Length: 363
Picture 1: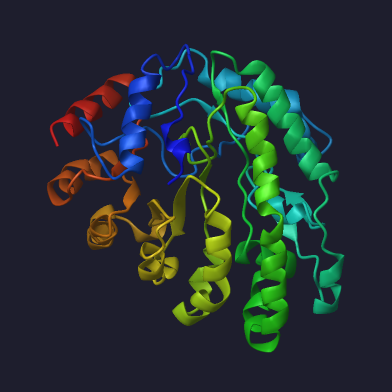
Picture 2: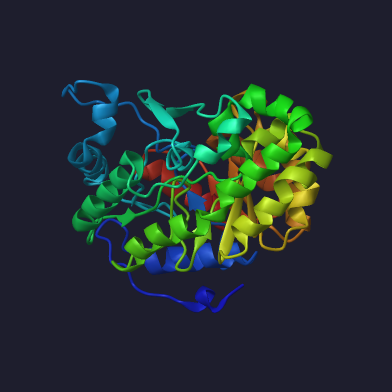
């Protein structure tokens, strides 16, 4: 890893007075080490998604997403008077949905209450040449507006992060549509590879643009997973890989993945479900992947059935983000070594959170 690992600065937050110690635990976790206990985040996977409780109305759902003042101020209201215990941090990340990177190239987003989707924009592979990164398009500009407004409002209150970027195969699936892309692997393999390369060629420039906005205001590198870092932290993923073989993953995804993650200081791979887990051995051999977020999904609980997989990741020297319920904590603690684990538990009450911290301290 680069010398960025040694960069450190203070970030005084009124609702996170133990920021420095929490970050020390996070850094130990990134390095597959442990100081005094495993780090804990008191929120579940995708906890940033919440239904609007506002009585306001907008002409359209898109207008609500685009209401910069509302989006940031409603986040500020949500953290008012709240103490952030353990390694839980107040993080606002500008969000227009998981396909926004594809939208930078010409795809159109449809907005729902809690997420958005890209309309496929490549009906025929002859249209691939129309895909161009446009940093003046409405989505890129709106993310800049959200970021700037949040940076003006965050001092002493919360962290500001960057949005959820998905280059690579997930981006191509958004351009083409998932079902068509599955067939294209057999019918148009060269065109698919061309599109994958297109999706990654300017990714680092886009990442660095938003990273520079944050660093200019002494913010850390953080996004929807809410695990901060002082250098460049990235969450690569390939949810599309659940539908392809390991050989196809090696052929189509691995070369682009390596280009995506090499410039970063730390990478946490988002491994979403057992379909994607078939590629775990390949991912564990990539030295630039420092941690794995294991997402078993609601249909694949409880966590105890995945203990062998978690131990396999630990045995490879990679850290793990684990999402579990409080009712599973005792059994999980008895089965797994705490080294390299970051626990995410959906616990709201401060008393209950402190009790969990005490239990994890005895692990």
